[in-house]
Image (cartoon, rainbow, N blue to C red; front, side, top):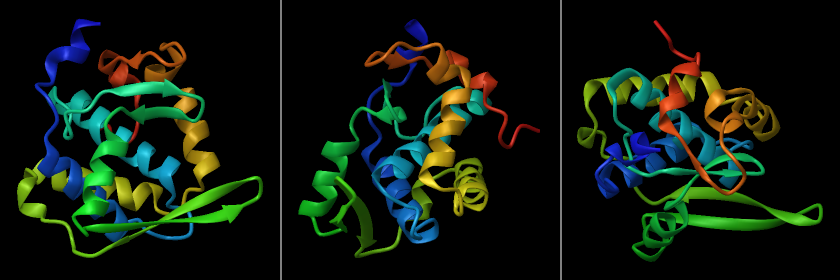
Length: 166
């Protein structure tokens, strides 16, 4: 598991701006909490595959609906408290659906050119994917497949992700 420790802590600036980016450019009827988690997963794991480090600095936990960023709730809570985003929860079937609104656009200057390209590619690919479809996709990939429930998802399996592989 030593590969998971290669990242040196959370990059809050990139984390928050990635969330703001996804809310601005991928925000349609399909963007709820689960899908946002998957977009962040692809951002971090594909960047790790191609450049050896994650963008947000977070690690991911193997949850029922696929890899989930460990710090997502605290980062989003901070963003709600500071007025950067609004999170709405609406009743849906026997649970609720989550939707997001941002109060400001992302500061893209915090990202490298490669990270900006990756953010754009992720939104281009996944914007119209349903939550079920993106969850299903993550379940087919090695990072989730080779991790155990509620344990860390190892970045070393990121080479199995085929999106945007040149």
